[in-house]
Image (cartoon, rainbow over all chains, first blue to last red; front, side, top):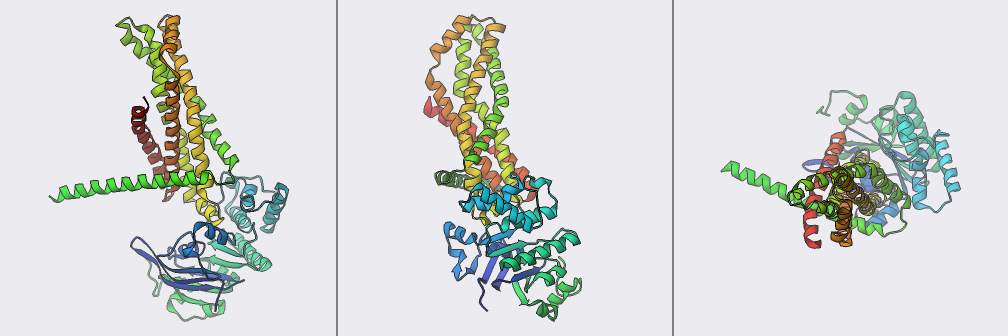
Length: 251
Length: 259
């Protein structure tokens, strides 16, 4: 199975701590892949490898058969324009308004007029369920609103691939469902390839076309929600049921 | 013996860490220079920083400069009075301000104000992943965040120093002529006699160098902050301390070269 994005034999350590230990993962084109795993288990590290924020100690990150780890900054930036990323705390620029935040990628990479940019900004904000917030500052927004603005910014340039770092962590159940719905709708409407990191077991079965479990630096199980749900791997069973009994040690 | 070797080990490690950090700061400086000339220029960011570093520091600089000039007049009067040379107070204040105190004290005040802000802002952006967000959106943080701040530092410090020199001399004039009753004519004549434009210009060159130092170190510390609020606090403190020490040390070498 070949995907647009392939992680091949990735090894990554921080000091003495080995975080990724021979990780292999193929991300299927046009589908949502959810990566689950323990807190501090390396999921964010994995995501950062996909977009080149981190370079592996060894291994390859292939996007359309181009090895990202070998690119210089200019070529890396060209590939990054195909991505959008929603960070865990949205990472909005707090010195700019909501409108300026969403307009940032447009002003950076296109030659659109101010009028066109304003139109697109309001479109993107509307598609995440926000209207009339362009002049607000990020500090005035709630957590859920920040994430939605972050998503609007991530899709401003209509990227092909969108990465989500724990999009529903810390949100109430209603907001969680709203964000899940948003991810599914955006993925379907624009035929995106989505990679989502999540802890939220219910959400992952809702939104994921494919689910991968990261454990001790490797992907131990990968498949459709059905495959994952019916897996007999003891680690996976313990994780999904949220039990403290099993091979996963509580550190 | 073990304690001595442990102490030597510790000393060696901190020296190497210090040298490594100086190297990294120099690399940041080089990348700032490289990005400064790559279009498009982010004029709006640059002007915003210039306003923050320059315009908003004026009050502090005026206060510092005027009181420095005033106290210089007061102190030098006592010494010169012994030789009936009070007429030299004016030129002493003017030379002191333009050559040394204007550039150095202005730089230290702006470091405390703007240098710490640069470290705190960039540090906070780093720990809230805003800098990662810039990379992800194929925008270079050095260009967007650091270049405007360095340009603001280099351009605004000389301008602020001129203001400081000016109010310092006025402060010295006020204390000398009106409080200490030095003859106004000789006071002013000696200034024009003994202070020449080179004193002023060299002071401004120093100021530009100090502006470069405080902005590069402030941005470097903030950019490399880690570890949440404590990390940002540490970065801010280190930025101010490092910049201040570097300014004072380089002041000696610049003065030795120029005067």
